[in-house]
Length: 268
Image (cartoon, rainbow, N blue to C red; front, top):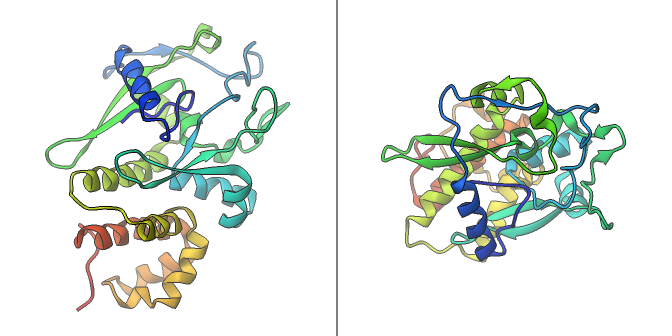
């Protein structure tokens, strides 16, 4: 599944299809293929790509951004996002809310560049690559990459050479992609069923994936940890570490939706 922050959001299915067809028409970046790119203040188009975006935020994106900003999830979601739903599945997806101005700048853009650079989203980190993923017959995530070369971008005139693997490592994408792939795997699995995502479960997914601070209170109120088999040492990590809680939320949602999870089970 390609995700391009410079194109349509999931509320416009025809635009999404156009985006997919465009990205899939680009040459794939194989194994050791390289591309030239660098982005820094000396590049003439610096910050030009931080405007007029439809940028999806994964659950891990939201976690990193709001932690970096020191915000609770309710305030962050209200101030910085628009809540939409993925087509074909109904799962929630948050989009970054651009500034209400002529150029519709990213709300985190400053004269010096990105003010949240250490916690910037996966879409920002991946650019100028487009990343496609699909599951093989064994459920393994298969990656494919293309170079998204936009006319305004002068970063491609820089001498630095990268392979896709080198770029992802340099941009610190391992955890971002891991959690994004876990979420998309749940959605893909759901689409392959005849199940319906009720509004109640949409709200539960929003709570569990994007509001981890409030999900903790839900877990305590529902005695959730006593309803599933989780080792005692991991329980403490889940309750005290939101990244571990996000992983648990994904396992728990699998259990709720499908009755089974590869890593979690109901207590007897």
